Amino acid sequence: MVQPDISFKERYFLFIGGEQMPPSTDEYISSYDPATGDSFTEIAVAGSRDVDEAVSTARTAFESWRNVSPEKRGRIVHRIGRKIRDSTDELAAIECKDQGKSISQAQSDMRGAWRYFEYYSGVADKLEGQSVPVGSDQVDFTLREPYGVSAQITPWNFPGNLFARGVAPALVAGNTVVVKPAPQTALSTLRLAKLCSEAGLPEGAVNIITGTGESTGQPLVSHPDIDTITFTGSVTTGQSIMKHAADTVTPVTLELGGKNPAMVFPDAPLDRTAESIASAIFTNAGQVCSAADRLLVHEDIHDQLVDRITSIVAEYEIGPGIEDPDVGPLASAEHKNRVLEYIAIGKEEGATPLLGGNALDRPGYFVEPTIFTDVQNDMRIAQEEIFGPVLSVISFRDEEEALSIANDTTYGLTAGIFTNDITRAHRLARYLEAGNVYVNKWFGDTTQTPFGGYKHSGIGREKGLEALDSYLQTKNVAIDISEEGSGTLPGA
Ligand code: NAD
Image (cartoon, rainbow, N blue to C red; front, top):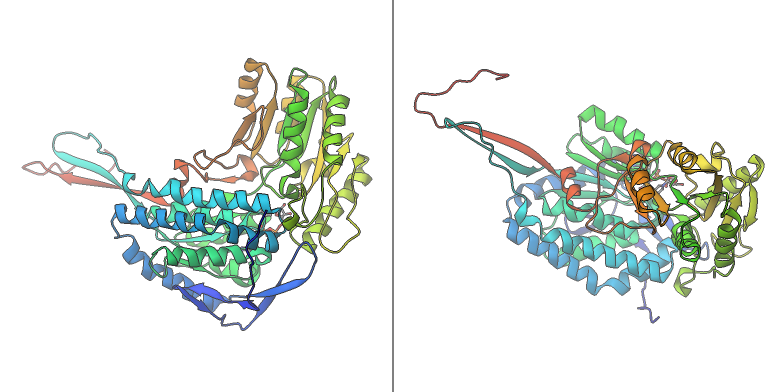
């Protein structure tokens, strides 16, 4: 695969009102290459003054962007998609270096990114309200209006792709945005914002403030002049954001990860299922909120299935993202340590480490793909999100027990059923407590399909037309057309 030659600046500024702006704090933090552990550039740390500046710039831009005709808004958003498409190789190379993921995965992320802009661009002129029949003396209709300034906080596992997932629907609905990417992986977001400008998006409609959760994220989510918040990340941070949002009564859309069960029954095709499960947990080194991190397998096929998965994974190549391995490094040194701690916890809890379980003896943040068997569902490795290349295998006796184990978690993002019995698949799909259920496959979500969590996995939905509900509020307009005035009382 031929890669574009990307050169990185010594440091990156904030992006506010279409301009690169140094931060008022005069502080910068290093960005590290996960494949080597070397620092290769610095990003700015925005403080409260920069957050104020970004929010007021987005507010000013909102007053004109909301009045751009829907047709034109759609065209601009479509052009952003084209720009991203034309820059796929460059963006993927940036993501691969900054996040550590394989170059194929980074390419796929960027195809997804332009697809969001393309998909939502067509909706801009179809955001229709309704006419409500209330009788002959009144005309009543609804308008779907943008909220205003959308604050978006993104994580480090799919930075560029998740920028597009939130920004595209926000813009078509007429909002402007302030995005705070994760400090570990801010570079693709800064490049994407520049591409938005180059596509003709008015200055100030997309602003990027980089920095840590404390320096930048917290002042953004508590800012009195933001109108809606979209966040993807951990449950703890999501809870903190909700508390801040309560003070200003700001609506939140939260996507908070999962501890997702894949249930495999004896009638499932074993080779195909083993391939699906291996990629469902080890893609992106397991740093995927919808990954299949709990494998629930019927006791009759437990050993066969585990053998097949193990032999697939044992052949995996592990290496720097740019070499397009099956498994790349984790995104940061801190996260590598967190994953290794969970592996140690699994061993202490009495689970059997069948494969992997160690860091690689080389620079960078590499952890071997790891499979634990003999896992009980009340163990921490079965309940807490590890967010790394670690599969926990749990055995079950029958459908009832499988369902009970699957739902016995505080999370509820995705779940999978592998079976050839269509009635069982429908039955279980109905009772699984998860926002997304896959049957005989994994990662069944597309740009068009709503995605989000039950229980602690979140609030609201991203993707598909349903995502627009996070960016539009309904106004009802009632007009008296009677000759004498109808004068209804409240509560009628
Ligand atoms: P995090 O939730 O703390 O960080 C996500 C984003 O929130 C980052 O941009 C961060 O800077 C920002 N942030 C942090 N504290 C904030 C605050 N108080 N106010 C506003 N913004 C804030 O996640 P993390 O610490 O980077 O990773 C911890 C764990 O979170 C991971 O191990 C994983 O389990 C989970 N995670 C989940 C997802 C997901 O896709 N759902 C993504 C990344 C991490």
